Length: 80
Image (cartoon, rainbow, N blue to C red):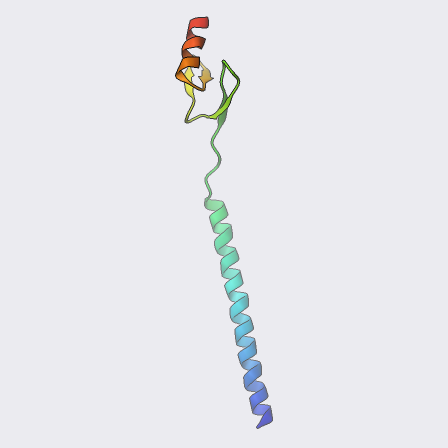
């Protein structure tokens, strides 16, 4: 009877260890998939007037130069 109980407990222990190992594998695979799906960062441009670095989507471009605000764009246009 003692041997049967030993092997039953051994089997349950191995099953639990396998499930823990398998869940770790799945979470690592999901983590690497999330890292690959992460978008690449946006370009940063420098204001031609004050030198402030701003994301390109927020910058105002004119004549091949980038500006951080409409006021700096206007100053840059007047300086030409």
